[in-house]
Image 1: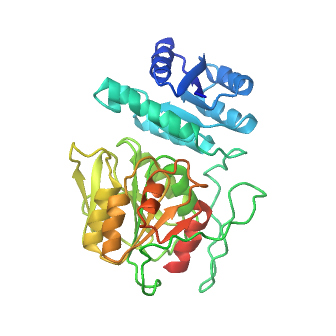
Image 2: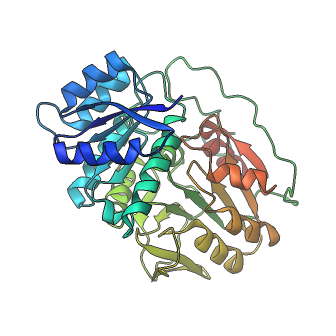
Image 3: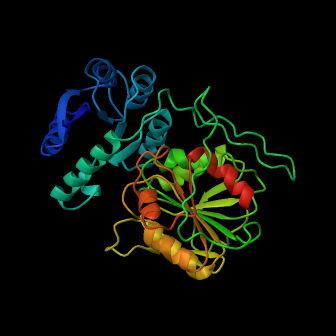
Length: 370
């Protein structure tokens, strides 16, 4: 049975264009359209689409408010269309906080110069998100302050799930192949995190649970446009006890600081220093997890804790293989807690994951091993 899609935008031209692209895929069918957020809420309740694709700026009711109401009344996957501007970045992050799972540029030429290729990307993204698990309640606001850090020497308590009244975290499943050997504590000099679809919320869940005195630097590769990473880094910095900043060429990595790779470029390691470079046009992802992981494998062999979180595709698998060959440790997020189980799955299926963790357990495990 085709995936049922509700398309929401105040532009009749854009509604028609998106509908034509989605209906061209036999696995998708647009069951209706809406021209503002209020109509979107009403039609989501009555038609129960498998996924809603929606603009942010609309009359009567904006997309962010509509997301909150849909997630409160009839939760389902929602993908936003965003303008790649500073204000668009802030609004898109608000929509993700409200419960949307992902976003795409509203101007399709910013996805690909090839119109057919851009359409295929949209179809693939909608199909992947439509199959994603959806929380049964609205996502907690990202503005919730982080919990107090444990006393010195204390073992971190298990991290609760974000939904109120949720069950305690499950025991951690462990992938056996290619397990790293040797003592864990004291061996790491860097944490490297790669993620894509669902990453902004996943990173928030992890980073806000780390104490101010986290003893290692963290580098983050999140697939994100150039106009988004400064706003994303600034927002996380206001919410976390650790410092979060967009990585800059020449930055010396410091403990307790998370460096987010700038969108549209590649961030690599040169010893303990970051280098930000223009990206090779042949690379699909800018920034690319494989590129950064490969440089970390060379700069700090055996001293990296790499974590691959939710995301489409397989970016991070080849970089994880290079890290493992040098003796590093690789963790992957489990399928149940992923928005899209693509990147972590590629690592697990390749036998590269030392541990497979629920998102709720990642921060606590980081504190245990470092």
